[in-house]
Image 1 (tube, rainbow, N blue to C red):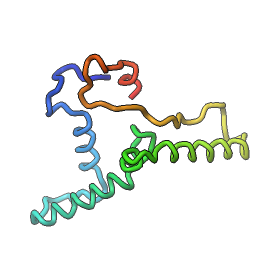
Image 2: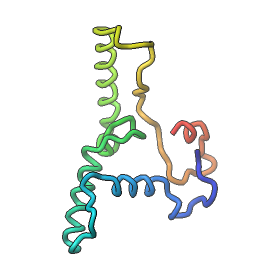
Image 3: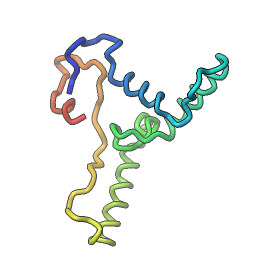
Image 4: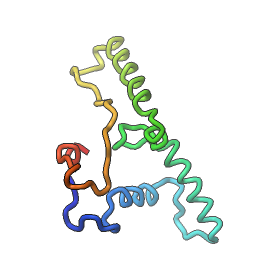
Length: 126
């Protein structure tokens, strides 16, 4: 659902809020403050590498940001779909219905969409 309380305000950014939560709850986030600026920078650098290359985002259909950014998400999702369909054929008793996870690549995402480009159905599905 789009935020309407303070449109285009930098401190009401759902992407930033989500990132801060991921940082805060990451298993390597220190319980105590960093002792040095260098220690903090090293931790952030390692976190950013993990976040972009390993962390599979639910909002991106469980592909990494780099896979999405480099246009690899469609191939990853198509391969995943084929594997699931084969598993369903091999073991139909494990599947209680016909539906499987939606593995269609996501469309465009916007931080602050222009009103003329704003599609409410896209935002509600996100």
